[in-house]
Image 1 (cartoon, rainbow, N blue to C red):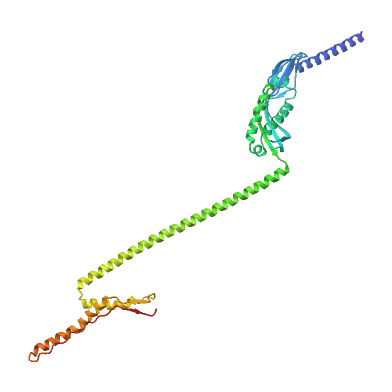
Image 2: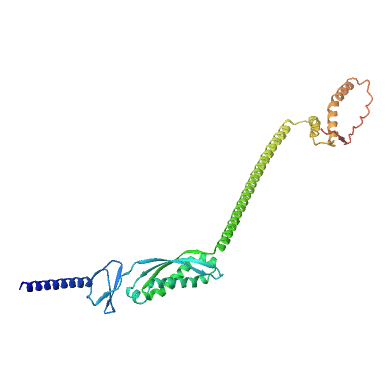
Length: 335
């Protein structure tokens, strides 16, 4: 009797444990917690049923099955360098970086087997098509154009996979070593040429500024000389006018003028450059004026003595010969 009760209690305990384990398994398979920024695809009896959103979700145990979670955030993938032949038959190595995001978990699961590998292969083939139509210089200077073309082609091709390509960047474009050496020499020559051009421009500007300064200095000097000459001429004119006025105010006679004229004659030959002195023809008139000045007192005294003695008239004096001085040239030794 006791043995039967013991066996029954053991069987009941085993059944209870089995039921408890079954309930735990059912609950574990029925309750699914999906993290934020992820999505889960649920299949019911092998067929797509629904896509689980982040949070707590309830499934039908043993009927529904959830596939691995898919990251819905934007992903950055750097692909290894790919050899690409340019239009001028040069092999360059190009590294690419692709920014993409899964927008449809169902399409990313069922439309493509491995969307990451597909994006890599599509990027490589598109890159070769785009860069193959450019030469090396265009490929090095047209990165934005290449990035735009790659993004457009990849976005169109991956749209049906539930993937949106946001950006495609060329991380590095490495030409062959020989081409790099040639490019360095070309850049060095270009920099030397620019340096020579800048030096020549500086020399040109310096010469222009120097000439401009000299021109301005010459203009200012000429203006100063002109003003000085004008002022000097005005002073001389005023001096001449003053002298002329003084002479007319003093009313000089011909004797004084002839004497002053003779005093000024030696000053003509005072210059060091005077090699020849020409006696002007007016010298004769000046000498006549001086002789008349000196002889006029004697003539007056003789006339008075003659008038006082009328008994003995003096014979008339013979006319004095006229002194004619021909203009001659006198050579003076150089001072």
